[in-house]
Amino acid sequence: MSRTKRYGTMWLTHAVLILGAFTMVFPFFWQIWLSLMSNAEVTAVPPTLIPAQFKWQNYVTVFERIPFLNQFWNSVLITVIRTIGQVVLCSLAGYAFARMHFRGRGALLAVVLSILMVPGQIYLLPQYQLIQGMHLLDTTWGIVLPGIFSAFGTFLMRQFFVGLPNELEESARLDGANPFQIFYLVMLPLAKPAISAVVITTVLWSWNDLLWPLVVTSQDKSMPLSVGIAMFAGRDTTDYSVMMAAATMAMAPILILFVALQRRVIEGLAHTGLKG
Image 1 (cartoon, helix red, strand yellow):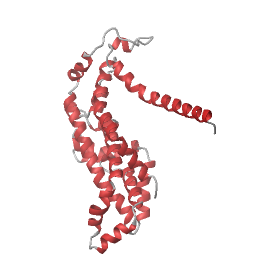
Image 2 (cartoon, rainbow, N blue to C red):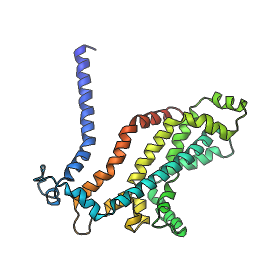
Image 3 (cartoon, one colour):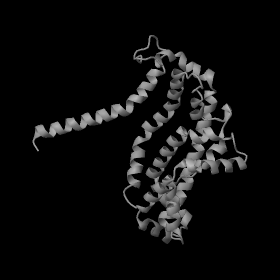
Image 4 (spheres, rainbow, N blue to C red):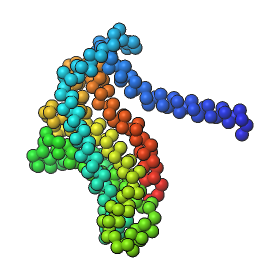
């Protein structure tokens, strides 16, 4: 391939990537831009591109409309508990499916993976009845429990453990380690990339979860941010500019976390997808 043709291909590739990146990033910038307009400018036809005056007051109005800080900490608590639960349970389950031999292992793994093919809405009514029977409606645990285990996280951890060499376990057994010691002291420290991937995917999913918290909560003090922001949508009118300001503040911590740890996420997903 000639140098001119090679450069032409490179520029075309970069142009496509830049266009794709712009398409993905533009909604975030547009959201921030709308949060600085008045509601009349947001809903104007044709749309207003440059506001007459930047409405920084919209960010203050968020705290007047909803208990933002309380709902923020609700989201943090729910996300932390779900993430810890999934790391612990998915790591144990993934290790068992990958490295331990027991009767019915293949059938049980197929049952777990079949959950990935079923829409979550199908479980909505049974889960609600269970949480209602446990008297956990309008509580943090009522939101957390159905999401404390993940078939996807189990599959992710299983794929990683499958790719580790058998010699590691054999050496640990010769040193007298029991199965739990092999898992905790030998295998788990090597699974940091997979654990990072489970953590990030769980945090993103839990922070943005709307449907289930919307079903089991009815009081402002027990709602996470996702539900609190949804409450801005009124029956007759909706203050879109204030809603965008609330969404921007809610999005910021997760966006920062993802940018800081994106290399670990990509590394974890790459490792878990190679073998199995």
